[in-house]
Length: 296
Image 1 (tube, rainbow, N blue to C red):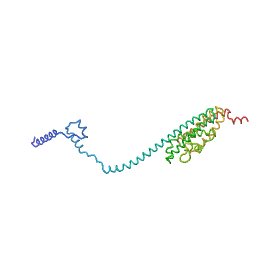
Image 2 (image 1 turned 180 degrees about the horizontal axis):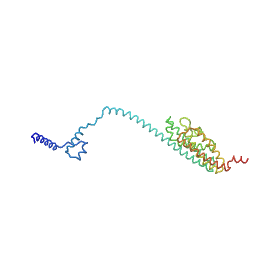
Image 3 (image 1 turned 120 degrees about the horizontal axis):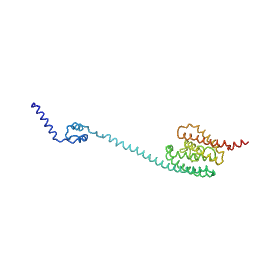
Image 4 (image 1 turned 90 degrees about the vertical axis):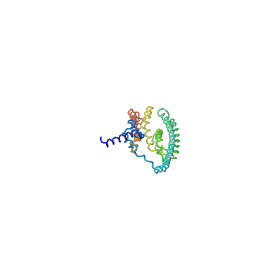
């Protein structure tokens, strides 16, 4: 071996021995997991340590951006504070409305329970007297609703859903009571008057009125059967004439495929059941008017 090569190899061995004898610096976080499974002084870790040590430092937060966020924060906080106040006020108002609507529902149930006696052999005046007593209570409750809505003018339809179903049930009850008394239809203006409402800020919604009329038709098939059982054979003719006219009037409306349209479609089944009762009475010759004509 040449002397120069031998000297070079000896110098390399001495440099390696001095490197192995010097303890390495602690590994960075990126090479910590790898150092658990490899030898502590392995030369394999050298490129990884150099790569991790040469990684760029995390960017510092811009002082201008921080100062801008601190300036914009009060404006944002003020906006959301205003939103919080509005939501709290709306929630309080809705709770007051729902408390009154709950009393309306309770009075409506009592009136409907009183009207159930119309299917029994009870004088009609007594039945209507009990129901009208609850109607007076409902009238006062709707006056309370009107006073509450005066605190938020122009937001009728925002809270309308809170009393919609209860109003539809009340209109159905009032329309049935009106028919029992007069044999005719309760008009929209008359329904508003009975509820103590006006056509101004707080009135009776037209769709609620029409839906209530559709609900009213559900009471007639049972009423007709019970009246025929009690010997009133002219009742099916009266009810059939009324429902036929009402159904024809509804067909003038351009109803979409919504809740009102579904209820209107159910009216034809009530009309068909009344027609069947009238047909059974007619073929047996029990209709009063036709019996007199045949006898003449």
